[in-house]
Image (cartoon, rainbow, N blue to C red; front, top):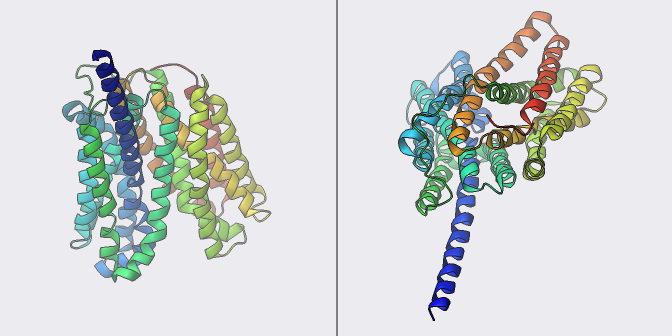
Length: 401
């Protein structure tokens, strides 16, 4: 009888663990889904927002630059927050900041809009740094799969933010309720995350060490940081400038250029779901990183040498190259032995990496203004991508920081 009781107890525990794992997977996906709409929802309504607030073009430029700089600063602070509050609680704080910032930024004028965006971006940065820690601690046997789920949800959220906000603007009667609507899924993610984290296990609330070593003198940590920063730099430039390039030299109209930009996000969804899981199964991820980088290089060369030949083909190749983002996150989780080191490596890679990436769009535009053409800016991007492929190959080798 006691044996039967023990068997029933074990089966019940197994069912609870399975249910907790499923709920935690949903919590990770929901969190990721909310880490881009706060940013991508602004662009389609930026002109309307600026006119309504009586703000300048400089203000608009600041509004779009602030999130990237905030990613860098908050990314460096995130490991400290995790040490003080625990990873699970820190992600809850991040989601609360995100939801609060989304509401705050629509309540008053242009200054509060900037302030609310800063708060929301801080929440995004905290969560973005800590989710790889959650994946490492909670799903050690499924790091590639869960990183793929996380990245795919992140890309889907970016697409939904840009695609659904204009219809919301029309349906709700203005930009304020349209932008504030995105606080609702953030609150939902907060509720689900809090419930999942309280069920325990899976390392979600693990405390980081208080007196651990620094990674600032670790060569591999800097290689991963440069890899992350260069792929982010390329992504920010492409997202900001690709439509303009396609219209100027690719022979496409404004509508088609917008559709091609949207295609980049769509391409990333299936790749993010499949490639990280496959890459994580092998000892080295270098081959995948070099392969995707080679696709991106072919796309850049096509846009440089024969832009009007096939804008669709060049965009597809470029989108494949940009999908290396999922592998950048995968390497962060795989190159650290513990959750504590993962937190430090994630904070370092995303903090310093986003600082590097923030210079990309400005430098690309500056080179275009100075030279009056696209050749020199594209040569700069090609150089960035070549270096990215090289450091990415090093980052993908099976070693630990």
